[in-house]
Length: 327
Image (tube, rainbow, N blue to C red; front, side, top):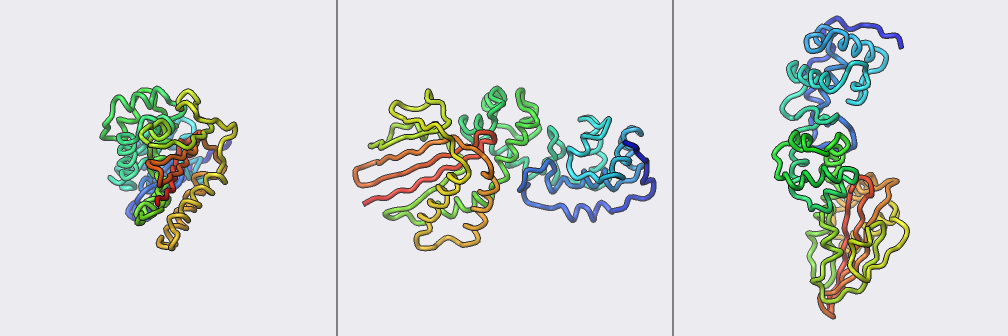
């Protein structure tokens, strides 16, 4: 590829203008640059060669300017793909973007190939500090030792200390970010369902829960049935049945929608919350496969509970639904 060094004039955009375009409460899609950190990309796209050269070796600055002349950078991955740009250079790029006013304190910085906002980082720390051992291992299915180390070392105060934990990779950090920030509209729907009055029948839902505790608990008076799929049979109580096929997005969507309808029997839920929550769910489950269980139980002869648990086999995205009745 032929590279041409260009852009020796003044920077084409003022940092203050760029900062004004990048404010957002949380990262809502699976991108590698939080909205508050977009200034890092703006910096490598808009800063002059002289400005880049002040923070980077000249050959790296030349490569960046040459590559952006062909195709502007969109993601952090795009920047990382430029020859001579590795972790140390990304750190220098972040420092330049911060010094030149392209990013501010709302952007924590680049953490394991992910540009993380302050709000995202706070959510990530809270998630790692609070979720059950089972859920954390589900979120990090290919980093068992890393999840165990996080559990042993928590509580954490910074996302950087999470990333520095042995066994935690850039994939792990991205999984944790996604688990912490990508399902807010769906969690708003869950909160609305759970806030409904619960007289003789009702429904509850959850995004974060301990599936091991739910499936192995023995505190209920009657257990009517436990059917699981994709769960290690050795972790289930005696009498559990195992079906061979995992759940798909259609099964998860149908179960959640049925539970919302059950809670919304008299239409008390705001339509926008339902619509946005289900749309967000659809984004999280599209094309995915899920392990999980169906559980029926009763605390007395005059009531009944039906529980469904679904856990994404790769990302650990989880949802629990429960409907109940009583006489």
